[in-house]
Length: 376
Image 1 (cartoon, rainbow, N blue to C red):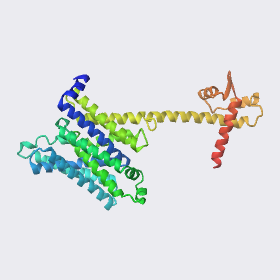
Image 2 (cartoon, one colour):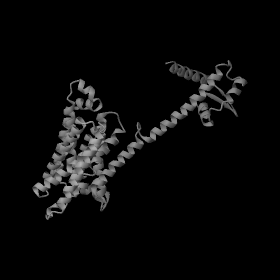
Image 3 (cartoon, one colour):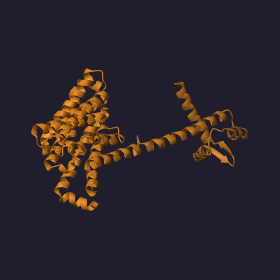
Image 4 (cartoon, helix red, strand yellow):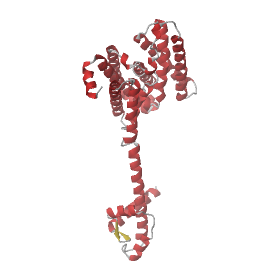
């Protein structure tokens, strides 16, 4: 299928339109809530909760003995909330750190869930077929009602963020200070965790248990590279997440034998890679550029400082004796010397070079600044 055919089908085909809208909404809500998980340094939280939801899906099937998506979502929600509260309990009641608690709950719940799935697969009941799709997701099973539910939850989440914006912003960056102001940080923490659980449960059908944490964290990690503002970060994360969903769905639909969930996660990973490299403030490319510029500036400052130390003891900085001393200095390269000439700090004549009056004044200012810094 060609791209223009896909765009045409989005507006005419019910299934494709539903999947595209569903993945876009899912990416947006995951980006918004994932920003808080990244800033709170709880990146494993999404992974732990998504894996903790698996036993709930299996138990819901054992109770209903039918593949009811609403029952599965309810079971996953309850199981995910139990896992999140166990994580909080381990952190607050024991001396174990958060990463240990997250890893413990992740492995415990996922192992229990896989045990239940193995038991279900051996049951003499044909209804259990397809439960393994919740491990990696199956976007093709999305219905319009699922998309509406995602949209409603996203709207509620957005309204709650606006309502508690000041409190959430303060608790994310300085929880201790928020406590001193009288904010209920425990309630705020539970609120964000509950919304993260709900977002993960909504995404299990599309992306699956294994990949859901990447859907939650990748857009937020990419957005973090571009800004220091929480509002801009949440907005960018929502855009990155929604775009990953739409582009991933398009690639999956236009190519055979490509699962939608993994493709969406790979597109989100592309956003992360581009952000890590090309971000002006934190990107590796611009960081290397700044490093090289600072190194070159240091070389120029080193040369100018030596020039000033020599020239300040000579009344005539163009005297042959002063020029001879300057030319004996080996702390420069031809490239740095050429840059100094371009700035009109030195004058080059053949193989000899000398300090210009403007260069002398610049070197004197630099020398005085360094002396002032050392005195402090």
